[in-house]
Length: 168
Image (cartoon, rainbow, N blue to C red; front, side):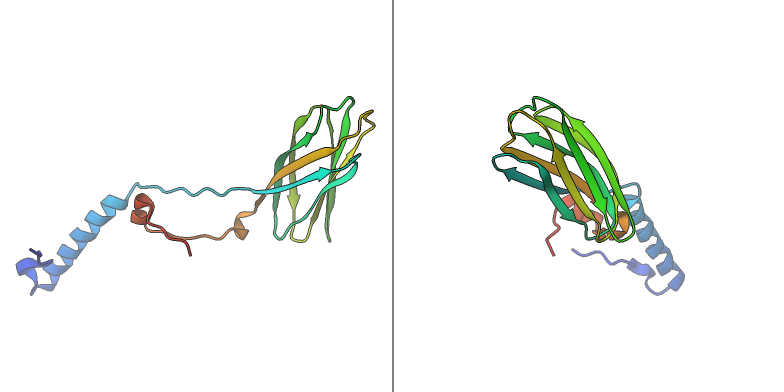
């Protein structure tokens, strides 16, 4: 059985407005205070090199939009016998930056926090004098685009709660 929205008040415009206001207030109370969050994940930049004696440039990447290189990892096939110099270069039309890191473990974390602009290039270079050459080097870094480059999508709260969002 369907209930009439205005009931017997359907002829009086003021009463109709009051009924509509009451309905809107009830709906607003249900939605009010509900918060939805979205995760903006950083993008991975990675490479793996294999060879007899890996030195020099081991990762190159060009950025399509403004952002920041957050951090990353470097992994060698074996623990270095001596320190390895890692150089991270960013360069572009208007700026350049370079940071050096010394690593002495098989797997090392590198914190970058380097700002990049559209068209900037990123280059990771290793230099070492290890007695035993590296035959395998893995690199992986995370970069996050600035907010103005992120696509924003709007969803109804019901869609988020019911997980009924379909891909575009």
